[in-house]
Length: 313
Image 1: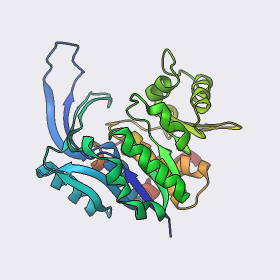
Image 2: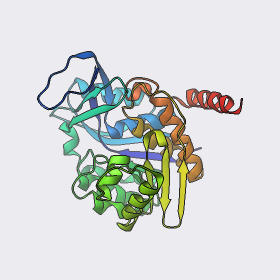
Image 3: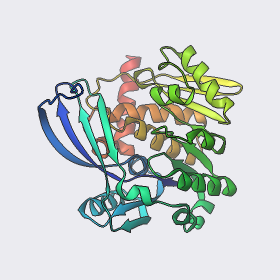
């Protein structure tokens, strides 16, 4: 049986509009269609891990409104324990998302109840950390709460995965508490204070080593269509992506983190976990939405075998 995964993070309602192209500043463009999806980086990663048969517990905050009910019920339906999610008398967090014809997205988040998650809320869940194999955290909730969770997980001997998204002031102070830091291309460049995103594995490695110098034990750079790259003090390992035609890249990074955590909680090696995460993320971009696009374990197993057979023919 796999170990428990605790996710501390945001729960948002994703309001998604598809467009032919993104507007320039001051411009209005007509959207093609609108949809409402459960989202939030924390909830996305919890949902992804649960669908992949991870044993997941969610700690976070929602509003006392219809969106809050939608988000918690959706997580519960996937098998996530949501008793650690608090309800508050303000609005649930929302994300305003536009997706263009190439599947790329632009996102604006209003934190709502997520902004009220406190170290005290986290401390009340101490027993969950004591039993956890893996902790997943992101930066869409207040940093003091994230820090409290990471410290409790480290005390308990759990593996700590920090997704530094979005990169906010003070994020560097959390790096030394993480076993794995998993930035995407833009987040990696920001953490490394580089002038632009890495255009090659060599540039990504150099930027990752800057992040390592800030205290991170391992950096896993999520490089989109180029896959992912693990960099530690004495080791580098590229994990090539599975080629697909993207339909919607929303939450692909969250799927990656949820799958990575699930594989590590099952006792897989880090290389096995990385390739498993690549496969889950690749599958997710072939469907629309955040959580609705995420694969179940059975779906991913069948899809991965099909791709493997295709490469061997």
